[in-house]
Length: 511
Image (cartoon, rainbow, N blue to C red):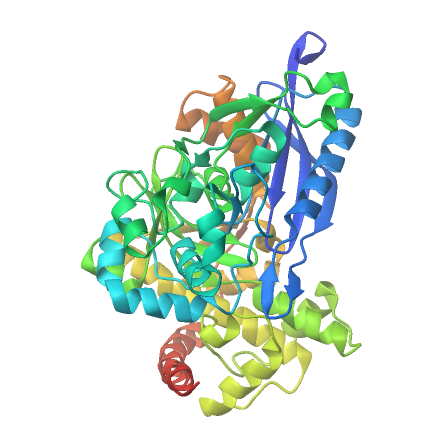
């Protein structure tokens, strides 16, 4: 397909499909040789399906929304050279020998994953899992989801012919080609950190057939062209390239967070907060294991980071407020939080009791009582406490990151949708005691497009990608304030988190 032109300048039209845990969006991208401009074409909710005691993703609805967005994007642009999909990590679909999906993909917050993790760690050992894969222990990792499947419905794995992670499954629906993209594969905890390929021995040890895993493709690999019969009723789709971008949304977001200044740290902020930096090779030291960091693949590098609970806490609070027919719009909540009393309470946002869907405000209330604090009595106090606690957790993780790398990061770059939350950005600057730069907000989509340009031969080096991002986005800087208040809060946070952890562990033992 030939690119369009304007005044003799070649313009490339691309589509970036960015799927998050709470919503999906399709953005049209225009590249003029110097900058990329993004425009949102379609946004849609990504709602989990609750069936009995199970949580699923409605992958068919997501695929239909993607196709509707693609058709609208083509109408707007008149042409399209390529498209690529990025999404959240670890979840997967199982296909049988006739390429039919055996069940809707399970949601990573499904309750069965916590006991599955405990069983696998008891059997194999936490250190062995980390040394082989370099991946942070989290109950939703693919390895634990597979073990949970083996325990609850072993017939699924017996009937499975292939396993595809979410973006790879959607690429298969579009092209008929089955491959697993590298950046997402590195999140599964069944990929060898040293080999960069599936750890067949580890997979077999937990009783899962290793032959269901497909070959690994590097980010920037060009797949087949679009083969979807519905799209191909419009002949202009013939020849449109489908590209393996850095398909883990955080991998794409970190590409968009690259900075010419080195070293730098980033926070990819959304439903989750991913706090880390970029390293040339996985770091699997004793300290990395102790801090529970992870090494995830990037475009020619690795992302050393830690998953921190993010705006999920605020999203779930909004859901509960809506159920109670109270005001829940984000502007109102942030305005109330801004004028609430500072540091009324703090808590560790990574408490396992805050992982699953439920009444988050009630759980926070209970945590305050457990830790000898006064619970929030207003919605403004609740929201402020959530944001302050997130910022304090970022401080702890950033200090751990600097301990692992031996570097000090003078600037923290916040990208993703959460970067639009200026109150959280200011709190983060206050907590970490250094400048915070925000933007781009559509970081995953921007990184997605950058890899498409790399695959199409328009960008060739990481420095060219960095320059393109800098020329294409606007940023905002936040400087630290209220030093004494925040420094006092750090020690209090550490003490509260320790007590909180003891209560959570005791609750798990007795449940």
